[in-house]
Amino acid sequence: MTGPRPTGVVVHVLPVGGEGLLLEVPDLDSVLALESALREALATGSGPWRQVTDIVPAARTVLLLTGDGTDLAALRAAVLGIGGSVRVEHGSVGRPVLGTARTSHEVEIPVRYDGRDLDEVAALTGLSRAEVVAAHTGTPWRVAFGGFAPGFAYLVGGDARLRVPRRDRPRPFVPAGAVGLAGEFTGIYPRASPGGWQLVGTTDATLWDVSREPPALLGPGTTVRFVAVEAPR
Image (cartoon, rainbow, N blue to C red; front, top):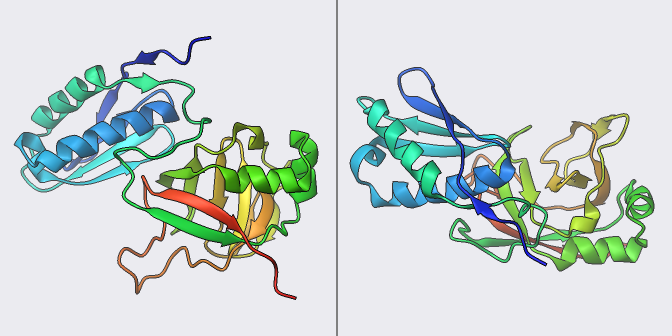
């Protein structure tokens, strides 16, 4: 049995005003591979990369922000060269991730597995409640990108058995610290908000704090390990 065949990334480059480029790619696997290669190029600080100020990944795009006077044509050519040479293992998002060159550090998140949808997740996956918890805590996750709300991170690479659909009807209120599952992602609500993810637990971790540098606890590339803790009596 052979694994996914690595391929290059097809990149569609769009200008963003006069100080940035939006890179459109086919899927999240391509985002992860391309972002890693772009960060390696940025670390060199040479050529057009000298003026790049930030790299912002999303589900199907990577945004490059630059300073004044950047030669966007040269940067576009450099991006296309990287896209053609980087290799993507399609289908890798759902597999366990033990760490990559992108990973800046590892964060442990204590979770009380008391979520309102834990029984539904167990039914959807064919696992017991204990097996759902073991699957969620047994594999490291990786922050692919942020979005939705300040401090919210989309985590990938966990146990593929935990892929479940969003709820048919989103809840009008999900409390801060709720830990949820949706598709290939897991995530933690940084503040109270509406939401449609399947809730499996809660955490007291502070996901967003403007007095902290950086404010977000979980930035792209961070490895996250969930640790089961008992609810207070």
